[in-house]
Amino acid sequence: MTPFVLWFTGLSGSGKSTLAREIAKYLSGKGYEVETLDGDAVRDIFPGTGFTEKERNEHIKRIGFIASLLEKHGVIVLASFISPYKASREFARKRCSTFIEVYVSASVGECEKRDAKGLYKKARCGEIDRFTGISDPYEAPERPELVVDTGVESVEESVRKVIEYIQRYL
Amino acid sequence: MTPFVLWFTGLSGSGKSTLAREIAKYLSGKGYEVETLDGDAVRDIFPGTGFTEKERNEHIKRIGFIASLLEKHGVIVLASFISPYKASREFARKRCSTFIEVYVSASVGECEKRDAKGLYKKARCGEIDRFTGISDPYEAPERPELVVDTGVESVEESVRKVIEYIQRYL
Image (cartoon, rainbow over the protein chains, first blue to last red):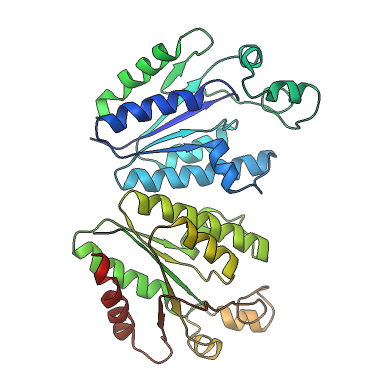
């Protein structure tokens, strides 16, 4: 097995964490050492992390560093972060040995329609500032290893695509 | 083997990294999975990290989080950070399962006498601001698992003390 970092990037509510959770379940079931790193969970531990471009980039770079350390010690890492800026995603890619960028490409319209956490509503009425896709930019990946369109595919289909892709490393 | 986090705290130039390096060599030689995290090296990757109390605490908390993740996956972590504030050392301790605080207790006088990197000289003439022990506080541990006095002991003696202590986890 070659350890790798599966990096899910996409808008809030696009389904990144759901996919990561399913794939983590699959990999753990096969006996692999797996770590999931999730934007909300990490921000809970470090509530001081802000949402400016600089702060978002620093945050993502640190996660990239953590992912690379775990990968180096044989852990498969599933990272789910909006990670809207190319610069810090590229930093993460460069630090890791096998970096698989998965672009979870549901549109703003689609994510807003679901709005499971009610965040889009808050962003629309200005209760949340700097909300990616509404009042803050999202730089879509240009050459991601994988694209899953959760606006069209079912969760099962997207999960299957990712699992098919990672077979070469297992 | 029970994985653990060896956390070296002490002034700049007290010998933290030297001890960590020797112990890492010993553990790697025995076939254990080891990671060394070092203040200078990590700050090189994140040059934006400042030296105010708030920034130092945030920095150390993040390192504690990283250490705990590695420990969770079976890696022995050797962390060498001045880590001058109790609050963030305690945060690190709480996140880790087996946290061994090693207080590298050489005095300011002793560290300044060596001054291998010429930093104390710069701090004395005000070229470096917020330098721990000179112009910034150091909160010594109250109940560290181990104290090594590198002002009195040789490197070999200090290394032996640490290696003796960690045998219970190997």
